[in-house]
Length: 149
Image (cartoon, rainbow, N blue to C red; front, side, top):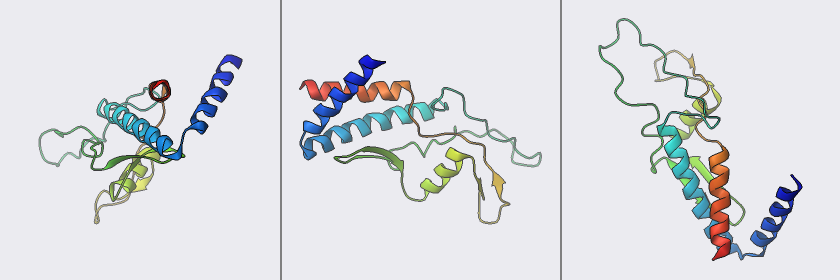
């Protein structure tokens, strides 16, 4: 463990030595890589811990015939709604606009109305954003690539 803390302090020193513009560029590339990873994970319908998403609730008996043709969060994971940005202090992957509310409901398993006239219902927690081992590995590799240049 002490070997890793020495590596982290050395890495923090190298990052602090960079100019604010280069730190912003590093953060932007890391954020884009993390967004790509999050999009792929959401497409696989898996939480950051590796568990599958809770499936949709069963449809009522008198609902339309057929199956739901799209997987969950198909539009939500597009670049239009899932933004990646970097500043000289941090790299951020977030949802924007109206979908931010829907993503928050699913992230934490809150209550919401699916439409204006519908009854309020409880949604199970389906964490959309989060860090896993692969995401941390992406961050380390991206930092090493930039610092070696």
